Amino acid sequence: MVAGEAILSSASAIDRGKNEASEAERSRAEANDQAIAALVGEHSRLVYRIAYAALRQHQDAEDVTQEVFLRVLRYRSKLAEVEDPKTWLARIAWRVAVERSRKRRAGESSIENESAALDVAASDPIGDATVEQAQVAAIVETLIRALPEKLRQPLILSTIEEMSPREVAAVLGIKESAVRSRVFRARKILKERLAERVGSRG
Amino acid sequence: MESNFQKSRDNAETERDPLDGMLDAALAKYSAVEPRAGLEQRILAHVRSEQNRIPARSWWQWGAAGLVAAAVVIVMALGWKSSRPAKLEVQRAAAPIQTVQPPATQASANGGMQTAVAVRLRHKATRHHVHPPMVVADGPKLDQFPSPRPLSAEELALVRYVKQFPSDAVMIASAQEEFEKEVQQEGAARRQATSNSVEEER
Image (cartoon, rainbow over all chains, first blue to last red; front, top):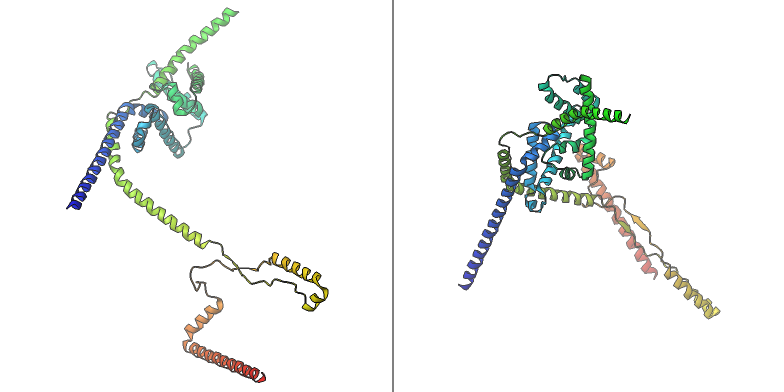
């Protein structure tokens, strides 16, 4: 009789322990869900913009954004260890986008040829003041594509308004001073080439 | 002169200013994109569906990983067994230890000097071990006995002959057996006769 009671009490203790464990697990999962939802709410736009800056296509940018948050889900148990979620997400987004861009480029014919890109830019007519801005934007985009990668990457990340030079540096794994100098050089090159285009038209 | 230079620089700057403005505007627009409406909801829905899939998939993945690991271990073990180098079979043939034993007559004649030399030589012989000859097996040690080796050309020919002429083969085999028996009997009789003669001589 005593033994039976002991077994029953130990069984109920085990059951209680199991329930507590599953409850703890559930609450942890809920906390993770909330954390992911908060990250999505706060940073999905930034992630999207980073992806768009690298890929220049809305659909690809959205795919990359989804992929980034799926990666976050995979590391959900370590979310508490992340010190700066914004930079962390930006870094993941950049990596995924660059990876995708490389794959896409491998499938397409090379668009790295600078002179070809500049020829396309030169063929764009500039005249009407109302369309001038759009055309300049198109030329600048082509000119950016023709920049060397070392200058292009910090430049396009710095065009994202949410990104500070410090964050750009953290994403690219370089010094903040390097980001500033590269952006400066990239802008200088762009301005010179834009002046050539505008001057040749004007 | 200096004022002219200043003027020209100012002119250049005023010329460049609109370019700067154009560039800034173009760069500001470069990444100022908005995702399609409902991006957050789409991401969260995707994340949740993936989250539901993960536990079910993890069991399957663990099982598959376990199977793969077991298969790898088995293959490695088999590979290691079959490629194990043949053991060196050291034939422990008792090599005769050469000891110099001078005849008793000489020893007595020469006295203690000869005996000392003999003892020294015996010690030397026992110190220098004669390495036994090493016999290396022809092929790797096989797990099965008799070892499953392919039949030789003669054996194959024999098998073919037995298949073609089974009655002849049986006859030949029985004749061979009888012949061997006779040879054995003769040998036994000869041994018996020699032992008898030795006893008679004694």
